[in-house]
Image 1 (cartoon, rainbow over the protein chains, first blue to last red):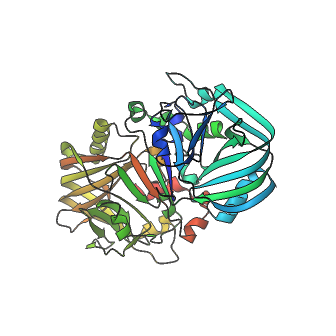
Image 2: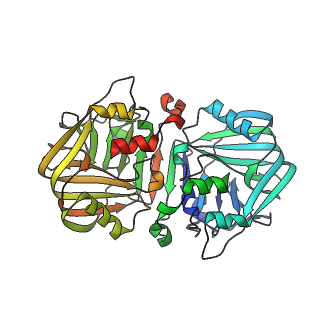
Image 3: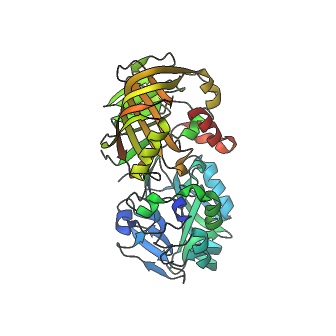
Length: 236
Length: 236
């Protein structure tokens, strides 16, 4: 257990051509952290792990705790050791993101943000699980649901990756959300403002694990995939 | 000690704008492996670690063993557990590289190759150490020396990185060389043919460590650097 290490299984790039097989179990992911985000096999919903509990928001907007046998093609986790950074009042998403970078000088470093408070005009999405043979990220993401709340208490869990890792991860911020009542969440697309507490945890190390036992991954030719284009289309 | 893990300190990207401060000691690098490659502070020569011994080829072509206090801005290491893959006879560099990928299906995986044998028409280079304030990789690399041997016994140590990690590392192969007599080596630019034994070690994990305590690194704005262009100019 190392609080300076961020664990990542898979790459965002492998989702682009539809390599959506779950190649890591939730049990294995939790061995690398009590906090995290990810997606299930076939892009089965949006995951957020808080205090060791893995919540899934599915495409019907339901929030479930998934079992240890749940598998994921792509995920992050780390052991929480956040430091308080600031409180914000009516900050937009852009203001929140910029202020964190301004205070931490972390633009070239992996770090996580945990924001608890009241969010307005929150817009999340969750993708519907697709079945084999899996289609591309762009095709699969068409089966996504968008959820909105005018005002909701909750937690934003985000990871920031330096730009040179774009494609490996999302260059910049990648935020998931879960309401305090555990009845709303998903991949965070946008919000109006947030008022609450901002905590940060900075990592010196990315432990990047690849699905080297998955034949489809190993034999795929990524040369023809527009990784950056597809990711920023789907994750923006 | 995990033989499925490749350790990397720094990124190739940080060399491009000249962030050449040695931010890791050789002692720290050797804690993550007995085999590796790298460069010294200010691009001080080309390093190759074999059997736990860190050899440096400097810009005069001299081969020295460096002390544990020697510092590096960028390096890889791992604990050797190579598996024999094939023998080659009069294989060109391209044939060697292609045959390894063809046999291993490792194009999307980090792995290392260790080739021992007789090499013809070997061309290596080593950069001369630059002093502060450090200039860009392109400027610094102008002070490089090229060394050639018609025929030489020696060891090629290479790392292969999946293309999506280009910029983080060298996408594709990155090979260093040391002669069996320890009197010739460096960053391997090219060779005519090789006859010898090829061994491979495949990694499931990249342990990517960043110099988060180096202020110049943390505050640098990479947005204006042509990372891929500069790397393939200098590392080709």
